[in-house]
Amino acid sequence: MLREGVRYLAGCDEVGRGALAGPVSVGVVVIDPDVARVPRGLADSKLLSPARREALVPAINRWVRASAVGHAAPEEIDAWGLTCALRLAGLRALAALKIPPDVLLLDGSFDWLTPPATAHADDEPGLWDLGETEGVITPPWPVLHVPPVVTQVKADLSCASVAAASVLAKTTRDSMMVDLAATHPHFGWDENKGYASDRHRNQLRVHGPCEHHRRSWRLGVDDAAGRVRS
Image (cartoon, rainbow, N blue to C red):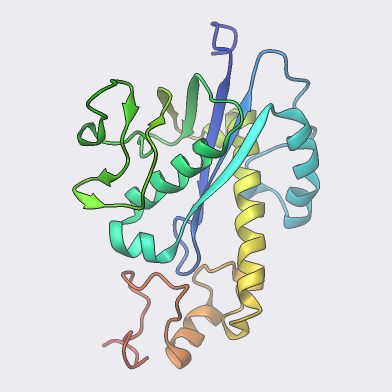
């Protein structure tokens, strides 16, 4: 796409989709034809150790023209569903970019980032008024330009910008979960980052969910009493 004339290309990836607790997070990086060589060792965040991911962050930040990570909280996932929450996190990341991209490359086969047609701003096609999404009220949003989205399956394995976005999203979200673990140490979020480890599920049965859990999900406990579901 850069060779074909795209000036500013964004790579985008998400983390936290399958977790029981914590936000979903979306990373976006912007590159152009003049960026330097890809940082040595850059790969999809799932293929890297935590230490290697952290070591890559400074190199990624030097390599890209702009970057941002957006989040959607558990209560937003519960209120509007995962797809809408992913979109909110992605649009928050886009809104924070200092350089707006011309095209965005999204990992996967489904474009969850582009708002539905019902969210189009009446006065200016190509912009979206995000005050209402999919028939439900969302947090207040300014009118925001969303670039054309191109999806590619396994882009995090084949495209350096998407891999970089995944590393930034993963390290940012992991740091958030480590901080949250200090207030709820029994869940082991410093180790499992909110995913369904044996320890996490066992402690859910003992303590029940807290405010950082996605209560609309099948957590394996009764939200009111903390009892194991039949």
